[in-house]
Image (cartoon, rainbow, N blue to C red):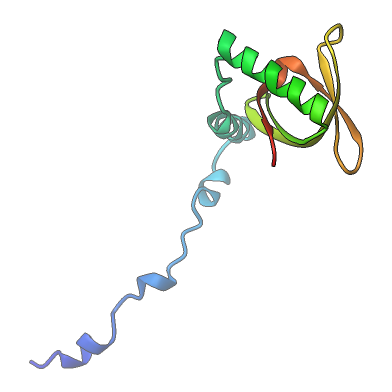
Amino acid sequence: MNHDFYEDEPIFDLSRLQDRGSKKWVAMMLPEHVALLRQYSEEIKREPKPELDEWDYDAIQHTLDAAIKSKADTKIKRWKNGEFIYNRGTVESVNLLKREIELKDPFYLLSLKLDEIVDVTIME
């Protein structure tokens, strides 16, 4: 028996198979289960808050002082609600009573909480 014609054409073309992933299971789940699964996937994406020590806070303070004096373009990395947020602009002032800094970017003036800041970098 000659099966040469099967060698040229695959029987099943797996590249055309498209799996719907988790969509096919959602229809069989209760809305409460779907909500819990979505909440769980959001929690997995969260970043843990970095533990800063005295040296880190001292470095942040010195960099903020230099940024205010030089009016240099500064990048500030903040941690809020499980994610890192980056802001860039010039540091206008630091208010220790309110524990906030004012950062001016090209569009508006931001008030950022000092407790959220995890890193400050002067851009050159």
